[in-house]
Image (tube, rainbow, N blue to C red; front, side, top):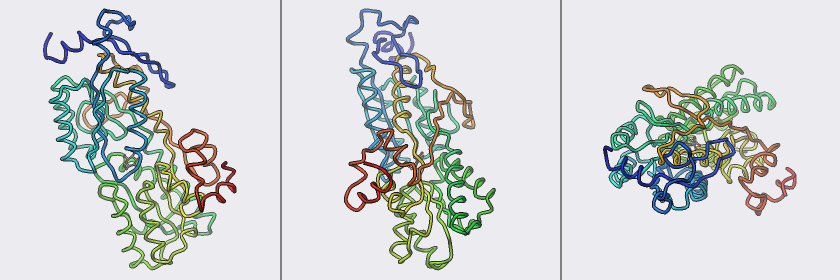
Length: 373
Ligand code: GAL
């Protein structure tokens, strides 16, 4: 037996879990039988899991990804320990956080990188220490993660571009033009959102006046950029705004509002179905967002983490994605476009938010209009 990790795995091999909706195999101990065999039950259930997420400026990570992951992990493996770290949009900080987890000797690492390229160093170090790595939501590039779990991110961009083009046509502005606010250049997802949305907008003949790649996905930087564009282009100089997520979309909308623009006449896109965005959509201040069932993503990651921590290869991968070094076994989930017309049938129906959470104060009347109660 080589290396402390291998020893610990053999000694501690059993974990308790259940199969997820995605038909993921029930994890088990190291024994091929998968049964709860062996006399190591008490000790073996305790696996150390590290969850490293990238940002605090976008609400999903602390509000959805972490709690949903933690709940599923606890269900699957009551004695597992979770070490959660958020990198605050700081790639160097994430490297330090990861090194600390590797030094601690965690059994598996679930990593959503601030910078997909820079994080290759983390994957290399973890793998050298015998720690399996799951590439969570954003693809880890130029390295050898064990599994990639995300959504079809090019499709996210396609949904955004098509919805905006359709709305512009309905508004009588089929060719726009628009201002385009993309995501962070260090995030591989932003590259895919951009690819999908540019192709859809181009196919519809929509003119893009200017594109901006938002450092760190910062809503405040998106707002500052939009302030500048309004000054340069004038209040009537554009007919729509592409924003890659709700955070940057919210920043652009705030800039337009403070310039005295009636934002209900300028369709703006988004992503993540943040609560504030759903409320904006209901009152017409934002045109659409993209709902991604983070519960499915986080739960698939928890299941795979328990599998890998127990030395079992997750059986849930349905495709592969090349990351510049290997074809990473992958699970790619399906995103859904959300406008005022289907808030009820998507985020409410899925229990992502309750009507009580959405329909507060000034939003109550809009909820009634949208049939949400
Ligand atoms: C992307 C993620 C999105 C988004 C963004 C900012 O990688 O898929 O949901 O919000 O990061 O954190």
